[in-house]
Length: 114
Image (cartoon, rainbow, N blue to C red):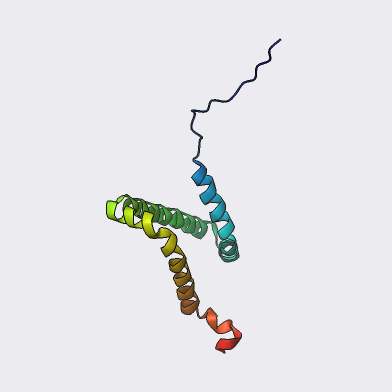
């Protein structure tokens, strides 16, 4: 007697692309520091200001995503990003971190800046 087993279809695309899962995990992992900011903000908000904050956040995230999408579709920018993004991104993130530390003056909390 021959037994058969059902093999799922290989040609059927997944509901969400695997890259989406990767981005979601990285976003959640990097977003832990935001919890310390947003929980007090939301805890001190009434219902109206909470909904205004959430709506503003969602609208602005959508705008940023649309702008990034349009930039990434431009041939010159897409070529540049595909060639040099691995080398540029660390410097952009470090520069952004230094800028945030400088503007918020949190660098003064370090002992050698006192």
